[in-house]
Every structure is written in structure tokens, then in C-alpha cells.
Image (cartoon, rainbow, N blue to C red):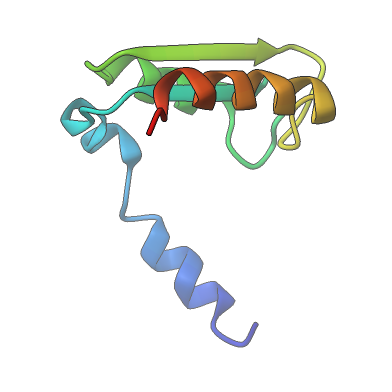
Length: 85
């Protein structure tokens, strides 16, 4: 807690948009349009730059915790399709 300001300052130098085009694995993004932590505009920018197989699930009325059990089932199904032994 005593270093929070410094951590936030350091993180402000990093933008996932700059690395998104290097992603080569399948990607699933669950996105709540009322997310005040990771705003949708920034997430869509990253999603659009990903060149690998990708999927986005948008929840218009949810925030950062996107859709609880409903989203959990979606993510588990996605993992079962992509993370086979």
C-alpha cells in the first residue's frame, strides 16, 4: 500500500496495445461495458490488434466482474475447446 502511487506511475508506461500483435495463442476476452477498471475502448483496441484466433464476449450491463456464473460457463467451455491435453 505504501508504494501504490509509484506502482501506478510505473504501470502508466505500459500499454498492452503495443504487445497485442505478438500474441500467437488463442484468446478469449470477457468484456463488461460498464467496467471502470479496464474501459471497453482500450480492450477493443487490444482485441483488434490480436492476430491469433480470438473471441470476445460482451456484457453490456456488467463491470469488471462480468456476468458471474454465466461468464464462468462460457470461459470453461472455451478452455475445454482450446486447452486439450
